[in-house]
Image (cartoon, rainbow over all chains, first blue to last red; front, side, top):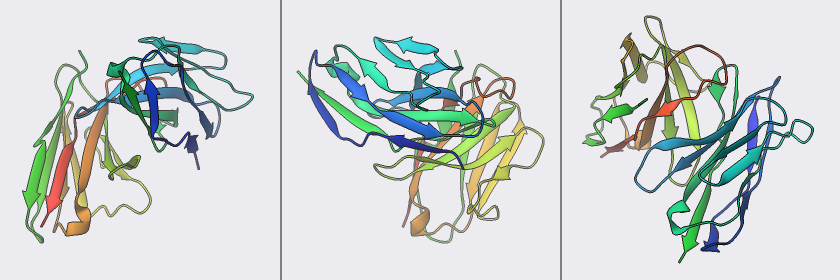
Length: 110
Length: 118
């Protein structure tokens, strides 16, 4: 079955630091790839997505590139802010279903 | 746009009773809704896929008689936890997809319902 391996947290960073969260997946065919974010006390929100190989999804300063050859979709942000503190989920979608990674808790300190 | 609500946001019930959780798409029609369960500090586990006007499709290991799902309209799906037990205590999250069946259509998530069974 489909599976997602996501970098374990928690991750604690200082403001303006560089953030990378690794994500690799196994899936049948060519899934669409998503990153969801869950801010404290809120529901999951779509952060960005990529639907085919070499696509780059971007939003709020975050980026991730669909790498078919390495089956990866690593999330990056060059300069994090305190407001980026949240739980981040990598989620490939295949056959209409999302498979979630374990989630990575990110805490950004001022 | 694309807002999904859940009601209630939290509920406490006694062991042996049943509890119903509602999931509504507020500004779009959802032919497909999903129900997830999230344990503390863990990922979301898909429980079932709910299609409007048809029976839900349950994931392996999820008891369909325990977790009754009804998707009676294009904007409402309900999850009923029957004869709840303390081990059913969890955070239940629904999501909705507003059109199509392709993988590139995103799901919109509700805020979740915290169920505590005493």
